[in-house]
Image 1 (cartoon, rainbow, N blue to C red):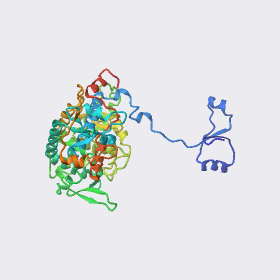
Image 2 (cartoon, one colour):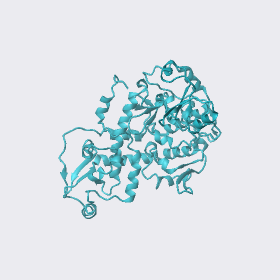
Image 3 (spheres, helix red, strand yellow):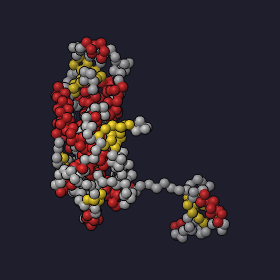
Image 4 (cartoon, rainbow, N blue to C red):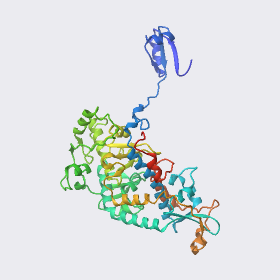
Length: 465
């Protein structure tokens, strides 16, 4: 007798049937299939242990049919993966006292840079000589620093972030307005720091610069929350309302039911749109609750509940600079924004509104209507700045000889080099560790590193995706 299958004779006693049920077995009625009859004589029953129910393969992103993939958006996510690694390294160097760091220390930060072995840290740095420099000190220790062009780029980024700060404060406030309790954990908002164009000092300084909009409060379990100060009806208008109806800010606006259609954009090779045209039209005509209205009365699993969740995700993606987010970050807000547990199914079901890329360790979701091919239709200055950084990555020229520098300042001689640990790196302070920990969410993607010119070769229009 095995644990998974028991063959038993049919018995008349109901007590024995009850025993079978107590053991958690399914009792199958006698099956009169000719195939089964050859194996089991008539009058036998099959008792099986409960089996796990798996999600159907059609709902898995990896098993999605190739004709649903958008190779232009796959190119966009590959470029994002490349530039994310470089931006992490630039931020790490920016936090150093002299904006240089031993390469051996970088080797311990592979997870933050998202550069797993066997990829070489030195080769990674050498791929971008217009941004990074390698030098040896008098002790033969290899250091990494930034070029003057990279330092100028960081100053330019700071200027754009300052100019964007007011808009970022509006988006964060509107997130609080959409939340069911009008407050959100500060750690969860921090996941959106780069996507919203928030500064590096978001937690320590920036959140206190807009006391008219929000404040930091501490919960009984010592968790920091960002709480809404005052409801602003002028900001309770969705980005879709502004785009479709041309509605501007209104001080008397009250969120309620909406009947706006979502912009749709299907892959050129996706032919089933004609088959489901009627259902799509019916979905578009269905009214739904505004993301800024109280949704606690909606029944989970209902059509109204799901469409309102789509509106919330559409609004959040509209706030981001590149109209793209990591799906893990969205799932963190399911309770706060009253959204279903299985968000991925909604993304996959509504292909014309969203596109999910499975490249990398984490999935990314795009707002399809915001892209024309692989390019954003509307680009803010920070997106243009990021593209400028991307254009300086992946240069393949003659390898330069690593220079040895001896013009270190007294601080470098006495403190910086004197504090080198046994493995050749400098010990990191607590505030530096916390700062670097914030960078983990920046480098989204798998461990592979592709040069810019390799990306376009990887995704050709004639390739099947």
